[in-house]
Length: 70
Image (spheres, rainbow, N blue to C red):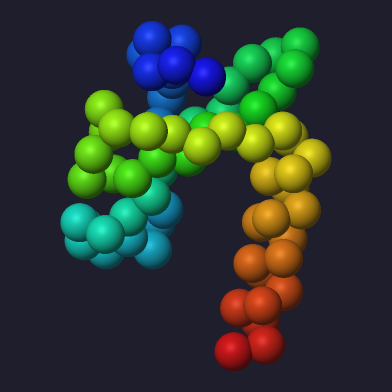
């Protein structure tokens, strides 16, 4: 997905970011075929990764499981 296609995305930073520079931002995109886009907050015009809704849900659930065990 090109940066042009992401130009209207509403990017959100984690509430855990504490205002630090080393953060990622995520944007939910699409209605018919929902995807999530992720980018480095330090370089918002740089590359983004996109994930299907299902892949993003699996990833976030795995992170929650891992962090509960810490």
